[in-house]
Length: 383
Image 1 (cartoon, rainbow, N blue to C red):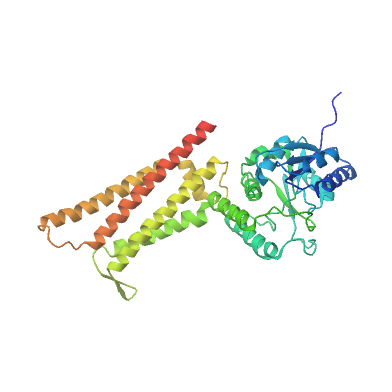
Image 2 (image 1 turned 60 degrees about the vertical axis):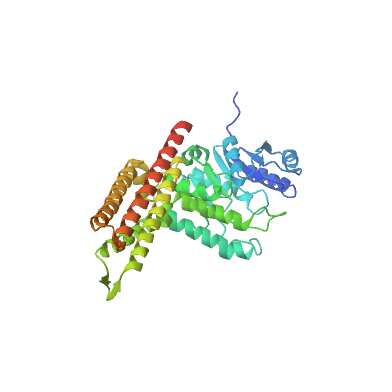
């Protein structure tokens, strides 16, 4: 006779938490029982050097070891190993209210795919979170996530979350570090998962924190820029390049009055620099778009990124060839005019800066097209 199916798996990632892990497992088992659920507690030991794994097993947890260090790596293993219909995930340091497991499951049973805890709903205990984390780090990172990915959740980096096990493959999660927390929220949005927030308490941790504030915060920022390049790379690049080329074309005939001021050679050089830098930013945005697409992003929030990802490298090659051709023609016209004049004094700065910008931009876009092609081939090879 088959045993009853497991309804919920409580997943704890664990790295040297011997002071807290035993109590966390006890509380999780009690919470499962009090909620009237069939469940298990899964501890993913992230190659601890203390007795964390042994203590967890002694208290009744199922323990698996993930030798690749990292918050995300531990959770990726835990999500693969979970046997329950629902998963509740939280840190093994006593900060999160595991006794609310039943409430997370109830919201999942009620139709939610992803339940995100909210520590800023007025239930946080005094001194539970360091001042800089609470009033600087979390607001900035959460604000960036809201801005870049068009979400309205209040606490993007809460470590207590619930989700349907069936929804995990739709999220295509891959990040191995602390940025996994951001990836999970972004991928839930991108996969159109029904996401709800649940206010929860937050308590002072037991034991020593493993968080490296600056390094881990930067990993979140890198992830957000790479996986939402529109605001930081694509649009600034397009605008900067457009202004640069407009300035170059406006001055192609020599000194020109713009807004009651006369612009000359210095403005030519500035326009050339803006055009080249703008093309560089745009190219980086295109590469980031294709990389993010290869990592499972659908760009629900960004029509430009979605179009670029679908279009592949062909538009880039066409644009690069057009710019290279225009740049060569411009330089050829200047050199031809110089030869016809008997190779005397050359005074063609406006045309030369425009031609140089076009040539440099063309080479950059050709390199970007090559990288996009490489990313596409790598994705096809890896399946």
